[in-house]
Image (cartoon, rainbow, N blue to C red; front, side):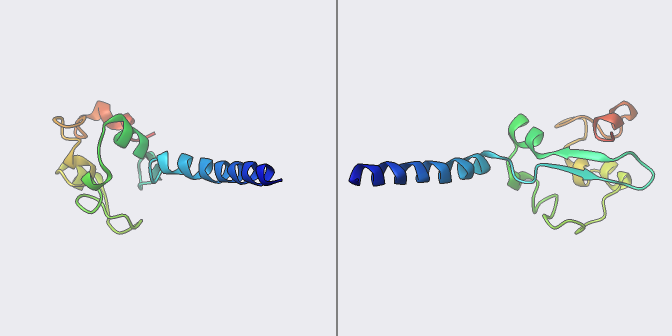
Length: 108
């Protein structure tokens, strides 16, 4: 009986920790879709930037972007001048947002 209780507790612990460990490995935020006026939607992938490019969350959040949705007004004029995405997507760190052929890399 004692062995059954120990095995049961172990199974419960494994079942509880698997979902939490899977959650902890997921990059926060997932994909975000922005719908600008007069332009195709913009899909932003946290996964691609964090895991694909090795960026840290703090590299963007609170320095370039706030975490509250709608806390800033982003537009291409500001981005091409080096604000928001344009801080890195300037042709040096990332692809250049000023290059027309790169529009489809974000706007889909």
